[in-house]
Length: 92
Image 1 (cartoon, helix red, strand yellow):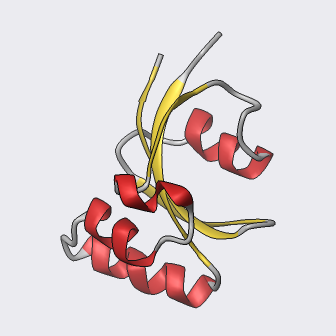
Image 2 (cartoon, rainbow, N blue to C red):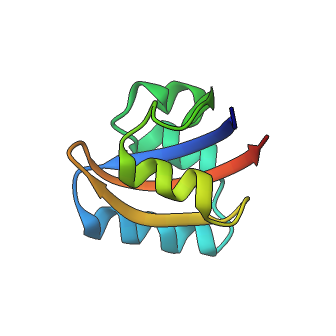
């Protein structure tokens, strides 16, 4: 079964996610922004979700992690939790 390692930043609004994505595009550190802004428990780990298999996350999240290019920040991706900026570190 494939696995992936990803990190994300979860915020309440699309506008907030867009602002953070702009900061990342200008060279801001992903982990620092995650620690400061993310509303997920993973924030204390810089947004790191560790390794997981397909089906462990919500479908919209999985679609990014398992289908989109690696090491690129994707989003905002809307789920029932809010808006995510997602970066897939690797897939096996």
